[in-house]
Length: 330
Ligand code: DP6
Image (tube, rainbow, N blue to C red; front, side, top):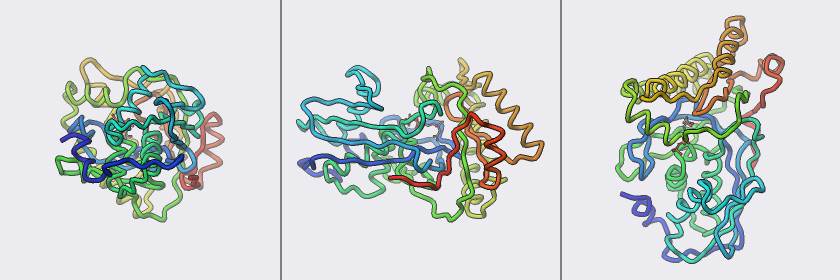
């Protein structure tokens, strides 16, 4: 099964564009991480995941007709041979299917670059919504999520605000490997992005997870651990239990990094400064400030805290970017 086979029933025989279409999607931070693929062609995950979207921090993308395909990110035109150009237009081709309709894509990232947060999740989610509007596809939410997932797994979750769960799914065509928002009135969670190094990483998440699944003797334990953590975090969201949510999210992230460290050769996204920051955070927690860390496929630390500790966290981390995920844009 290919993305084209999956999408065929949902796409019209002829693509009818509007003049221009713009869409916004928030970035997201996984509290229960996705790490490992069960199908690389459809980009199906080995485990489910759960995230919090970052509200007004994300990607705004506009599509219009052009003489040739181009993508401009934050005002910089990507070269035709760049990974960004290639990955974007391979993705678009799943819908365009050879139709002679070149596109000019412009995308702005509203997350400060210094925050060191990759934009592939919000980028592919905003692109998915913009394509849906540009070609008047009117795709149902489940298909939008599956389409965004094909672009980048974590993008499946970036289509919505708030807490979002991406089910692993069971179907071979990936039709049930989709994300959906979790209904919750809990608005106490806050996030601080602590930049350690905002330079480009050497190994993409996709390559990193493929290497880990292929070579790490610890990976076998990951899918079941991840499923348990996801269930624990989902319950903690419903019961407004920050202690369980934070402790489980931190343990989940470190378990994911442990699988990578055991890969052969080792894959280590953490820098010395990441570990120093973790030890400092653990000391602050021991001293009574209830904060937890989560870390994705990079050196930067994301700190989870509650609204009531806003002043203390700002004082402890003046260099961080502070995010209230429930302040929305779009
Ligand atoms: C560590 O979604 O970037 O951030 O599907 O290959 O594009 P691809 O991977 P990607 O991986 C995200 C990995 C993670 C955890 C997470 O966001 O769940």
